[in-house]
Image 1 (cartoon, rainbow, N blue to C red):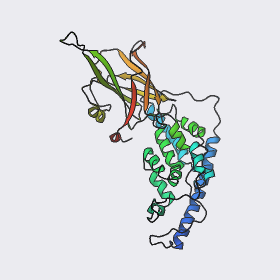
Image 2: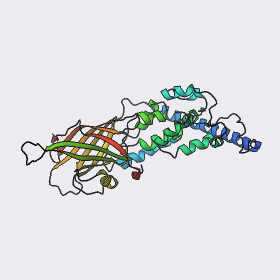
Image 3: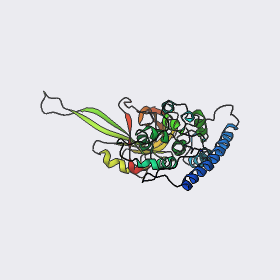
Image 4: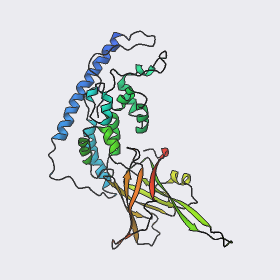
Length: 364
């Protein structure tokens, strides 16, 4: 992804609110500042490229590691070293130059945009105040928004789309989103960056990730025969119940099976490891490619004498692209605690489809 680099060429003085030109001192200050930042970014890009490319290739790719609850914090600590490399990345090309945009589908469209790009009002007589804000400041503001808001902003104009392609915006999402257990080992983030050619937006959209800012819900139904006083009338009841899965960044997962008597609005705000109710299990999760493995699902109260824990396997998918909002169950097994014997649990895989629902109070 291309970093929105301030151009080192002199910029035209900005018009003031009354239509006059800004003072020459302000214009000179902006040009000097852009030139200084450009020199710094070019140096940073050279340092990162040499740091990544000089790592000797391994004879075989690292094996995916399975972290215990005690090992996961150590793995995430080692991940900070990788983060330092990513945050040192700056691309010295100018985003305003269409030829500088990475060769992805969306960037090919960007290259056809007329130059120069600017915000324009639907009414020619109305001023566009956002044009007075430097591009660098707009990009800085965008870095505080979530990816959905950024994409909505990008849809308003060509200028907005180009601004949202800045690498620093999507680099932040990648660094925060792709760490164990989202990736099998800390160094895998560098492999992803090299695979996508430092196109952080495409990496974030196309690489599977488990959503932590909400809950995956499956609405399950089955028919149960009822009783009738009339022999000519058959009564059938449709039973609706819910399955919930909430994932946490420390590798913990909460699984809950509820009856039709408990509505989701009463469950979702309290769905966390401290919750205690019938049908609740707590275990651990890992993501490998697009497959999620849930292991050691057990009753947190410890009151059950049932000598089994459960494990589940899901296929993660996305509709539309980049949402990663669908889970399809692939396997559901009970595992004997002592012998390790696995027994498949009967479940209707076609009807047990999980859909993601974002929860603002979760805050991730």
